[in-house]
Length: 101
Image (cartoon, rainbow, N blue to C red; front, side, top):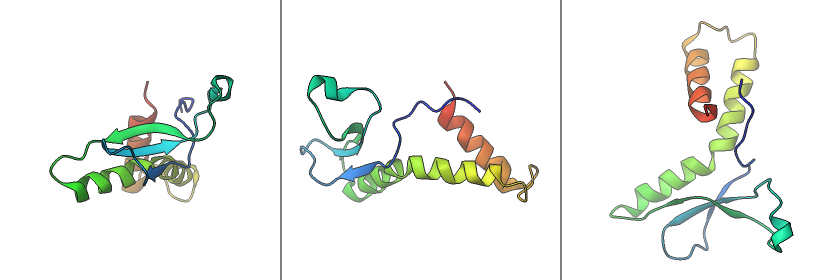
């Protein structure tokens, strides 16, 4: 499995965004403190176009990504699951999409 390079969770949907879309924020691992900046930074931004409810649902799904990845890693690490079961195969495929360079 590839080395994880994403910003670690938890991520959250920022309820106090700047009015230019819905922001997903997290705490990066790079040394932002050397620039005098503390706290969370934007991970992603969802543009609010015609469907605010859909945009918010997309933002919540993105914010859950680190926890979903951990759950999938737990599933494939469970030897009782069996590598030929459909859920195991789907989990491996989803992880590959998330961690491929």
